[in-house]
Length: 472
Image 1 (cartoon, rainbow, N blue to C red):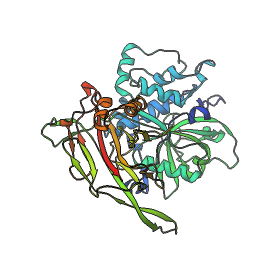
Image 2 (image 1 turned 180 degrees about the horizontal axis):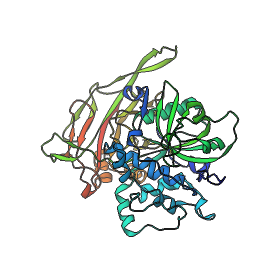
Image 3 (image 1 turned 180 degrees about the vertical axis):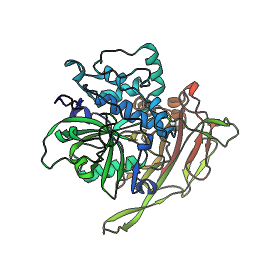
Image 4 (image 1 turned 90 degrees about the horizontal axis):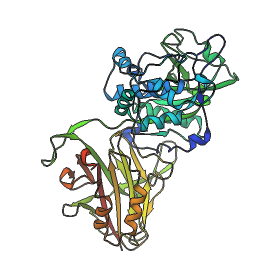
């Protein structure tokens, strides 16, 4: 913050780095589109920390801020003393990702911090304390070991560069409505350091020149007042106990970068099948094959396609679904919809045509494949685009639900494409080492839906839904 006339932030920015990240996919779904009028994650925030005379805002926003808040949400912690005692370290991140030169004011990139958080995690603040003026401390072996328990599953950019202000606001609100804090890179100006104790809103003057970027965490919105709520790192005496509000207009004008991350799934749930352990980490999901049957006119006069879901039936002998309507025609068009993917889990959608060619439909290049809420759905290939049955014969459409990110998915799909075996055998050969045993998966008989119990100790963490479609 400002001390003796000097203003400290520390966020380094790069369009090239930001654009190298995966972009969160465009979600849909009735429940996802219904957001509260206002949302605040303030009750899950620790006491605001103070970066002092250091360019360490990235460590505070990513570790002490977003990670701590996400963990508090996951564990339903609401007592500020409890949350602060269990807060993650700002220094653990900043000391390892800060740029060389200018000692402790050199700053850092959010992208580097998120990468560290995925690879190493972040220990607790009480284990590796932030000490103003000392950014050369190296974490101990104990701190590094503790950090492994607080890693993120994945991260992504919330929106691409060049998106409109209204689209930014909508995405920020939808993300916060899913109870996910958003890390932002915000242009700040001189009046930002003049915010007084107790002041609830920052009102930068029109035309006020920006003098740097600062990392903060967006923790709330109010669709009536048209304001966002942000968690800062200038201490609890700045603003409203370290928190400030900004109008939608001001924030979207000044926010160029926004990031989200997801924690590994920790929920435990009862699973119904006898062969599955009574208590186990669960994996679930559903898949839909739907065909366009016409258009509907929206309230604003726009026409949008209307789809009808096609029922399916499950074959317990080969664990493959088929369409209840029987054979399709070459040239038929359709969409696939992935649903009910728990937060912290991943999905991959691909198809194999009769000519053996394999296409990965989701995620596409530079598209994240994790989900912020199990209320969302993803239409494949897109809300207003379709897939087509272009050859006579059997098409196999497959979605893999996974508790881990599959870094070798493209290599596996290449092996599938070059296999001379029929699809069911080739699929088993290519994915057998990571597939959850069929005895631990409960597929529904009349719809493409399942519940499964992964076996983490044996690295069996993938459950498939396979649909076989014949075109004539």
